[in-house]
Image (cartoon, rainbow, N blue to C red; front, side, top):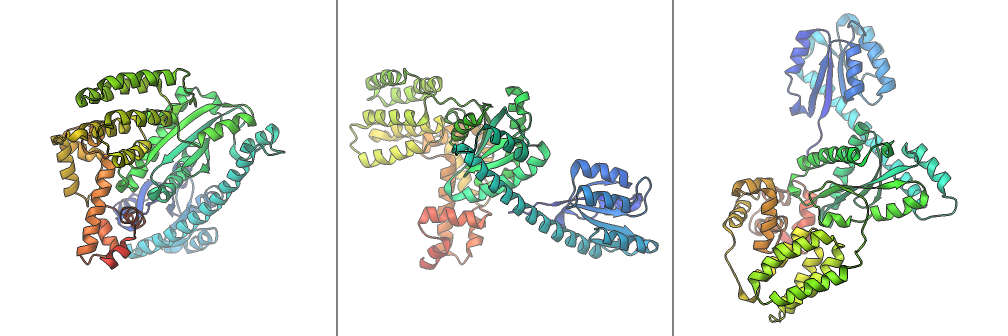
Length: 515
């Protein structure tokens, strides 16, 4: 996984020196030039807004000199690393600057690229140590606060409304009433540890930029505490959350492109919390996957927490079963019924996904009754239970109907082209959007028709092909495991190992040894 670049601010009143540093190859050495200013006052304003990791600053400047700047930064931004630029005549100033916290100093007139790189590397090592130390401290604090929060959800004696209000104010900068917001980062068990690390690192940064506090409540679920959220209407809050989620998704996609859509991130905005009992009920609900996610997979923000089943649900299901019985022997009509009538009925009713899947598995017995292939029926039943969206469920049902009773048919040309493109580019960072563009379809349309045509989702097919190719390379080449991982487009060794073990039942090393 690529290491995040450290951001550098250059502060000097001499334009030629700023231009020289501007042309330095920052990226190669793990840095990014965040900005430049001509005096300490401008630099201080920049630092307060953007918080750079490293500052390279002159000593003698108008308005505010380098020493004044360093003294203020040591108080306000103590973790910022400072490299000093100085002339020979300013050596005593340089000694003072080192004494009050600068990590290194460079002589302007003799400065070489190697000296700058050496100073930057010292600053980087110090900055990364500070980050690690602060991260450990914050993780310990979050764990303690999460445990404290758990006491309130359990209704333990002594954890009443008064203490809850104090806890919100002192630990989370919130006050009653407040609105409960949960962030869900869902994925497969094999990559949960990777996604967890990325999400929590990004939340750390977003927390400082957007002024909220977050706590983990279970694997992949985080509570967001936003000061004064009760004063925002739901539309304003939804827009703010969508912005945060867009940033989070964009950064995770950049870092973990090989996941190819396996991570599902969304937020749920609950009702206002007025007392501890309200929080207990809402927190328990927030810890589980929101039922509406099954019907609204494209929505980043879901409002409310209703999961009630309409009293007429069983009657409605019986009526649908009666209609199904009439057309069960005609694959064409049955497919059309699933694609249109069933979809509309499910979207209008928004029944709990588990309830809907139970009905579907009962109905499947009707159109598979003549096949007597109950082993396949049981396998497909598990597949139905695992579908995360209505689109995925419909695709599985359509594929089953169209391939039953020996009703085999040719796969659509666009899907065949998509499969061919994936097989030819396994080493590349393949995404649904890239493949869809290659075959002339929208990502949403390709995602919908791919499982209808093949019986598996786009992402499952890609994972399977990558593992097939990996097994071939492990068996027939002398490539090392990490080299094989890169050959099949997976940059994370840990993720590749977990995925291959799930595929083959053994680790890549064991597989190669026994091949």
